[in-house]
Image (cartoon, rainbow, N blue to C red; front, side, top):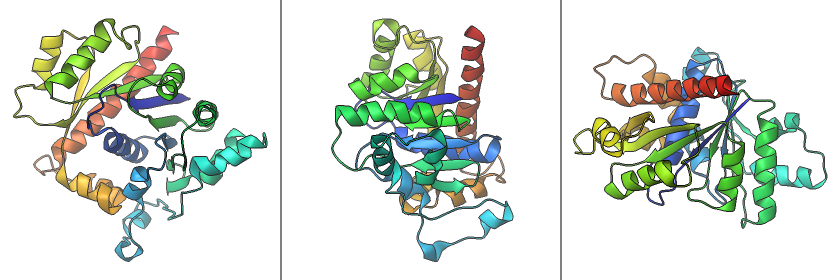
Length: 277
């Protein structure tokens, strides 16, 4: 099935992890897809923290939609799977035993490695992601930023690369250079997005596309305070479930529509790449 990597060459904050979280959650709710979200950052719990809220803040929204959430210690994640791989017993079907289930049969998350990154870990990630794609419809990878061995190896096996940029001039120029004659110049599977988008910036979506003369789709993802707070407080599930019934006049509507548009862009690119094969 499809491997989709969220990545950027920009070492500044582009909202990459939060965008991956938003896409994974909305995709699981809106589309009939079995989704796995994987982090490749070592010793980083940002993804798990976005979903695991304090027990005191339980809600009945999940039961209303017949969705199941399991609050588990997801520290097993990649670290636990590494031990199985060492004994040559890791099958695609075993991966789910080490994930955190957010929506049953819809969305699971897999935490990154707890330890120091090594070439062995890098190679394992590639093997793990390829195996995961055999049992999940969509594998979303929150890929470490920059051009390094891990990112290069995973980008090579990715069906789609969701490339993040910001409205800062250096970020726009880096994207333009990469697409023209840089690292991604020969890649036809790019879906671009503009993170932490501010409509009042002079670097609007239209101005950026016009100035760098790109044929890529660049999807704006506006900064949303309530979503940011939800990520920090483990309330992402509640946030997105509530957002499904808001009106177009709601303060969160723009953000939700941005996420939906990016998802449609990703799914469209998947179909486009399959037709090219």
